[in-house]
Length: 432
Image 1 (cartoon, one colour):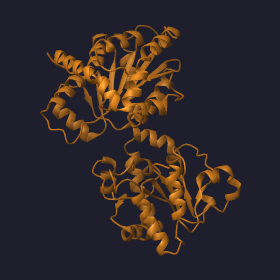
Image 2 (cartoon, one colour):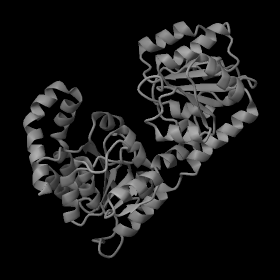
Image 3 (cartoon, one colour):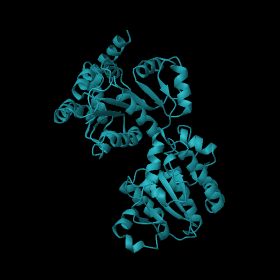
């Protein structure tokens, strides 16, 4: 009965797909490239007919970050195995189509008609991992029918979802088709266990924490080091900033007559030419990160007091320079990731809109994150915490402990996967 209802829903979607594509450029791009997914997978499998294949599906970029440590660990267990990754969104596909540990990347065809059956029969995966919540019934149905071990990791339920709704009923159906579900944290584990007691649900953690720790502990390759900055001036990194966030620091900059008592690195959420030019106009003495990259020796032991990061993809490493971090977005739609800077063991600050970020809520409760409303409160945070080494280190310890106490999900998940796919009933041949 449920399968029939699900099929009817997607027949309805298929009828309106041309109209939806016309008005949605991302959907149009997705569907245009999806047409070649079957061919790409067929060619991939023809080239490697006997290899062990892991199929990992993520909705977009954020979810794929949760998959990376698992993929890399599975590559250690099975060095000659192959990784096929599918995405639902163009942003995820475009950002990760050249990821070094993946052998095949394509869009996941819509869960319409026989797409799922054909895709699975073509790919012939030995193990499948869905990330977080992007679960599709027909795909899971045929994976179950073919006895292919299938896992959902970092599973979460929206806090706003009532218990008895059509959506929660749908989640029950798809979760039950998974070999095992790994909840993203204890709260999610308890909620999923309460809503779906028949699901094979395991208390786990978010693999993002393992990813953050691995990056934090890597050797950084940056054009500047902390030693290049004045030793008496703490370094504040303003990450993923919007204009409202930058205006707070600009007010301090003006009132202090352009002589801030700290070094400042601003990494805008969208470093467009227009935005960067505006920041250069606001902060007269600033230097662009690209200028430092072009001539690092010029700034050796004399780093500028204000730096504007004019490209994306650098922020997580730049946080390694920070003594404290201000996280942007919380005066708009909501705060950006607090977990990444927390991994470096530094005190955090943001605006008030943190309710959509479990990490921010927890870090605030642990006294690692300070919430401010205006420039005056920003100045107080800097004066009381950032400029005070003892307070700074104490709050930084709280932040780091939040991240490091949640490590281990990757080892837990990959160890279980290894045991399940190598159990006698699942072995069809040795891992290639």
